[in-house]
Image 1 (tube, helix red, strand yellow):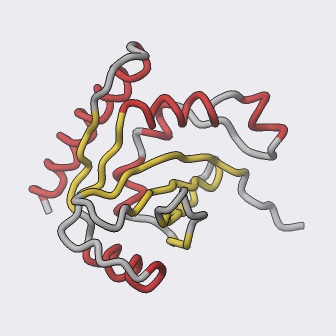
Image 2: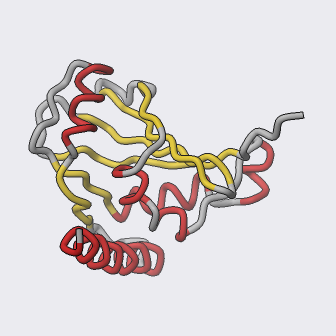
Image 3: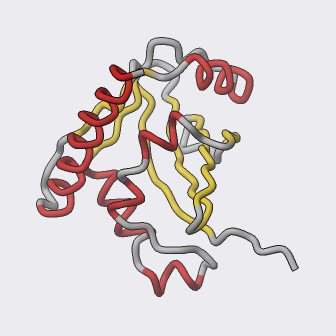
Length: 154
């Protein structure tokens, strides 16, 4: 367990640096590898889209970090969609979301590629994270994320 904690700690530090680089330099073309796809996710993806993603790695690019913040980070635009603006802090939770999600569902197909949507409930809302599943690739590409308010029961 200690090795896993150490891995997550190092990964979190690298991810935070990548997020900072992507937001400070609009031309950066970097990417960060967020670990191997877990067996639990492999099984779920196979059942949803019938693609075997064994031995693939989750990857997040600087362009997609910027996309998330540009498309889903403006509080005014998001409130019109009944959503909550995401922040760099939300993006830094991606390793937690892909490893400890509450649900995975089929996403909307992205051009010719399949996508899945991770769903994670937090105190401040429900986070949705979309990952593209290229049929022939060694990676799964994290594409975007958004947040919705938690439904309050009457």
